[in-house]
Length: 560
Image (cartoon, rainbow, N blue to C red; front, side):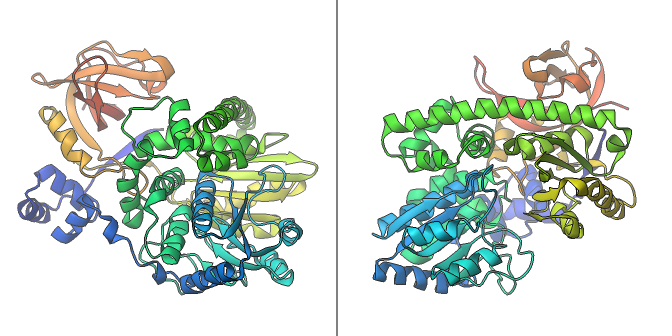
């Protein structure tokens, strides 16, 4: 899909002021201004985020009630059950709270529902089990905000509940002993974009009196994997936690690093997101996420290595199934003219593996440039997962079709649903009618927000070092995007393994290597000597040589 380039508006006076006050390079000052930073204090907080900058956890609504109830459970000698979600955020949240309970001498248990057999969130089946196990208090993490009926059933069984969740409430909150969710009404917490594990750590911080640095590695892992905005407290957590993942004393994390073959590499959000997260997620997608939780809690290296092998096998199976579902979905879309022309793509088939629907939806969205919902049907019921982009709120779209759904929930960009088979066609029609109002002016263009244009001579290891001061990069804080115009392709462009495009560019004086992952099919017809404009981020090429700055291509145009 063609991309529109939009150069961010320059504010030279503010940029000069920041550069002067903080002795910054003009480029770094511009990058800070582009990120909404307008004062020296804000710039210092961004460039040097300190753990002391974490907010008081008691600013969260109901935190005092939650801590008091947990202390009461300790005094009474009650059994406390931690109930989490099956994704990385949920598993790390469960591990953080469970470890805190054990540290406090509380009789603790953990439970993560089976994705295929039980589905997402708190379910009614846990009520008789919790009663049988003698549970006095149940704590949900990364789920529970929509579980009004389930919490009522727990109340009637004499079991109190604390909800710790970061999802949007869709209606009244459950009648729990405490509900910790910064997105609920009357909660004005300064960092409302915390992941579930971030909220779990705030709960532990409130209970223990200090932030649980011992588990900062787990908090960082879950925060990055859940793709929340790396701003505010999330930025502080990830900035300080990434190195702790690599050096973690936890046998489970070390086994995971080993099986992912990334030992010795500098830990980044991208490495966590593409190497560690998928392996932990694979257990919940292909079997039971209890395996991932067991790995994170494991302190015996040999046992951790064995568990990591199980996750690796699950991940390979997941990749195969994912590829098959995407291929079949594309065949269906291409075979039905109306589908490929829809504003929001809804595709379904009987028997697709439920564990890979979300990933398949992401791939289809990327391919067609439109929100996508992938549904697997079985015995009259469909279970679906959708993915969207900025500008189309998927959960709001599902809410618009609530009368057709058996259940739904999620975020702006990712949400799930349950729908009866006979309602899927009408669901597709109604979702597209809703999308037509959102996209009244046509489908949005894919826009590249260019931070600034650079002469090629400035692409250097010095600039790479300057840009690194703005890390960690990810959702909410993307890597700076640069553009350089009228460059000449100096070498014959090559398409290498995994559709990677590689060539050298020059302005006549400076020559730099450029690489574009996944761009071979789109730009494989480039030729040596061609004049191009390029949009790119910065990388480092250290393959069998001293490190050199490298251009990481994001778009290429023929120069005008």
